[in-house]
Length: 144
Image (tube, rainbow, N blue to C red; front, side, top):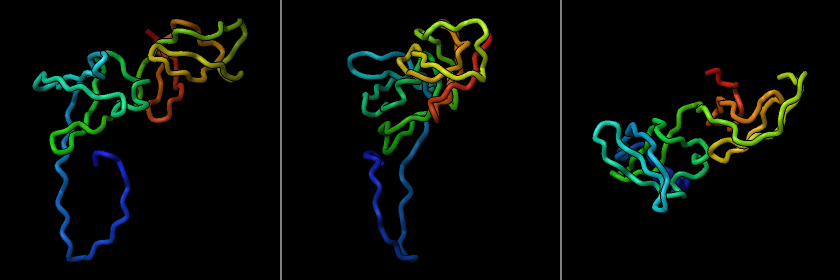
């Protein structure tokens, strides 16, 4: 559970397997510092720090105050589950031109977390976009 390794084991019908000590906790992402990524338990206000290795590619979707689920194994945090979509702001992209439409192609855009996604030509710097955390793809522009 901790390393994520896959093992190939054969079990007999009479073998008993103990249920793992797994727990999901609803937590809020607070900030990143030199120690890692800090999260706060929404019920107890206890804080836990996850390392860069534990966060992996999820760091591209973390915004301060976002709520998510952290998976614990034997009382130790081992992973996290993001919401299916997050709203991120475009910090850099080529400017759009009059007449560009949603069906006319795409261009790269860098978002506030450093994630680069392909977006339609009409997207401009400062636009807030809905991004699918499962695929890392642009879904739609968020109207505020």
